Length: 226
Image (cartoon, rainbow, N blue to C red; front, side, top):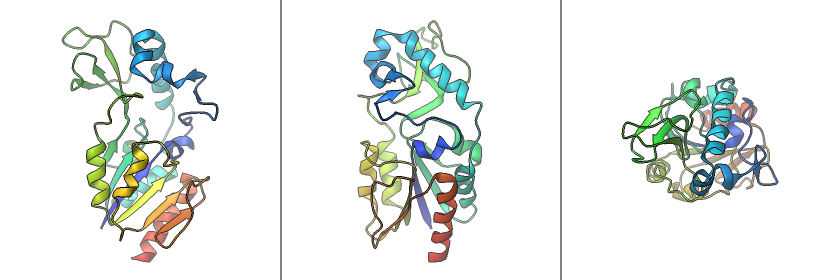
């Protein structure tokens, strides 16, 4: 039985990580295009690098929550694949072994010369930190306007799923929001979000709860349905 879980910012919010954007469109007080676009990086690389340095430091101070742990334990009985819009490593730290990061990973950097040169990076990243070809390193993050290289992998996973769970995402940010259309019409969908963007139907079960309370409940419903 293959279960694919799509997770967004609400998955990690209860661990203390702030969600991506406030209602006013700002991210930690910055216009998102200043700190999450190739143009912003070209204009002010120091600002962008320091922005992600702060996110990286914060990430290493928080822990996975009960929702992350429940998904990791689900692997004991099912073939579980997680597709996350989050750039943190909380799914992995909770014990999940098959995680696809759509928007990159905060604890990795890559070369501005060759994007296939990716390396682990836990410390601050500064101007003058170069790859082996003497080109500046940048956060391994998919910025606005850039392609989402893991999208095809994610589509294949959703298409092959027997069950789909969506946690902590509005499913309104594309291309990730389009993933659900690739689910088999026979695959039940469980949607966990305190402010769900959709309503329950014959095929969709909505739990208007946070990840820590809603994910375990969704898993109980899945087990009872089998």
